[in-house]
Image 1 (spheres, rainbow, N blue to C red):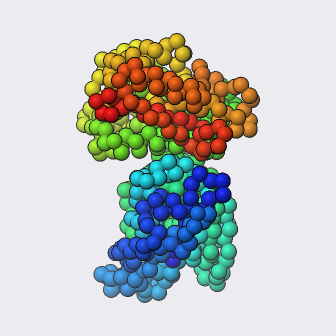
Image 2 (image 1 turned 90 degrees about the vertical axis):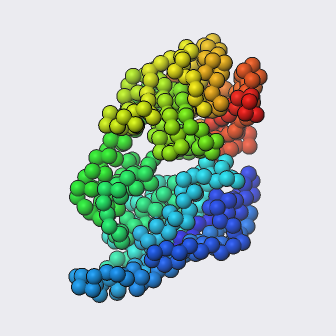
Image 3 (image 1 turned 180 degrees about the horizontal axis):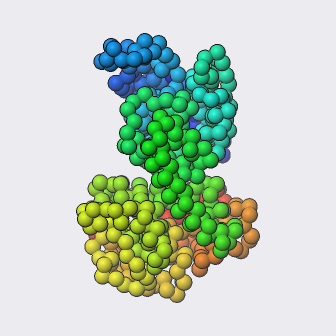
Length: 470
């Protein structure tokens, strides 16, 4: 059984398909072998070119090893030996995927982080796949995630149809790997290990950002948890909470403006890209304390709270409702003393100095400054860069030039009715350079999201580093 991942690049692309090696952390000229408890996972490249590069993860299972040590008197032991597990894509392939591409699944790439943070065109082939319930199940699972799906029947004489599954889509690599990790066993409708409550956490972690809104989430959850009612019910309750909170957030924006920022940016999942990029930078720089200014509903904090090296995480926002939502998401109401000491939420204005801002390694303002009236920006600059003075400050904001590419957006409009302004790239860099020079910081700028030759990226980021850290 195997998965083939093909990255394609047009002639005008600003990357090479050969970059797939950097994204997967596997050199294209080498054979990579990893032993598992059930067999051998081999990773190799069948095609290497600037336009197309294909990586294959092939899993060879040991049929005897699968049942070694089982009770010889167990019911159905013959069925343990005589089955299709060694030959069709199943949960064992998901395990090999996770163990072989752990860093890629986390969205990390030492050499090509910019590409890891953007959607890229991939062709995927999983073969052979056993699908319980008919090949249309593949369409139900993958089409809502934006993939073109082609399932060619190889054998229809078995209890579960055997197909050659091909997918095509423009997607973040980390999302692609998470989709395969969760959905390949769902197609098979079997998991070949003991299922307990820990499996709920794995499912929710790998399904973060897409499973709560998936129209087939009940089927996915039920199959992923081997139809164990108590576990399925608990998982669906958790997913409903996430889906309800997301709906509330989007509902607020849609009530203000039906063609608001979320609706515009949803096709490129820009907000996820921003948060993942900022979280990755903080982790890469090994910060131990973070001040998230304008934390909103705690989406960035949800990512950061999982980092073991982060000793202190504080979110600040002027909205009580947003802080209540953040507290629910972070489960602070049920947290112990250690968690409450490590993670805190504070109501406060961003344009007034606050002693509680002192002593942090890093501060973040993700899509915040555009909500502040321009005459009051100087107050934020003083209280943050001059008074609190964290070692690192990360600021993201929309790139106004990119608005021309949003088909439903009227010329001259801003992405959100609460935005006080939106800067071009030149305006943002002028502001950043002025602030850095005035307060003894260095600054670098980076795009976030798909790059257009004329208009740049939809979002832009400035990373400030205190003078002593230059």
